[in-house]
Image (cartoon, rainbow, N blue to C red; front, side, top):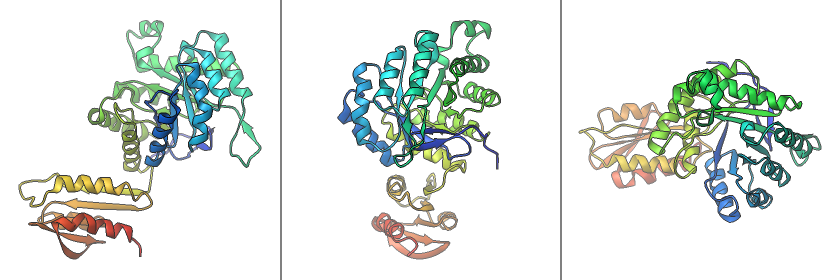
Length: 365
């Protein structure tokens, strides 16, 4: 088992990251932040899916002011995403942001950076409601390959991992200059291997928590593949304290993907892992929709830490299913229910899903 990088601990609301704390799952709303009702509705859906930190864009003063009402109705830390206007960062903190995300290079110079940092120090927020101790509002310093400074592009003959790291270190130094250390750092690129290399390089140079992800990864299909490869490489080196799987579409999809990536790497426990066969000419039941239905159903049982098998034939099915905690293996219009390695009974095909749900609902009884 690899050793995770021992970064410093930062509190984002009541979520602690770094220092060996569990890797936290983040997402970002795609609503208009000014529309409090729709934004809250999406955040609550993300919470239900397992999101632990949520970020909202703040392109206007009205969006910053909306944080006050949004905060009242949600249960996870709220992060303000800021570009270009330092005043929006200050307003978001005044209206309750638990963290802000900025690129210090695009908010108008060092004096504006100083104002943001001083505000982050000024607007203390409680770690928990029952604890009097206060802390600074943390700042995520974000660098993206698409906005790498022209001098660094020229210096490294293009956008490179080395250039991204130098840019990030420059931004960190800007905040450290004002004795600010409650930082999270991210270096993102849509180039998977460049992104992995950049995180490896920066992890050797700073001890701030790292937020990792493959930016602009793409649709649910291509984005999941790129994110799984990239995050797998990065996290498997012990690097990363929070993650986001960036997908084009409903952000709820990002949470399921992030959870599975973490679980596959042994960085998260709990919840049901569904394994299913790819089907072949021996399959005698309608396995593909059945497997999808089982996967959807499994999301209702986050309290269970089980492997569930869905197999399509009697050749390999029973053997594979026996390696799971519980499983179903199809036959000709019927299937076997297998539990803890033992065949329990035969079940008609149209009862397999309900039979499996019953077993999960009564697991451990």
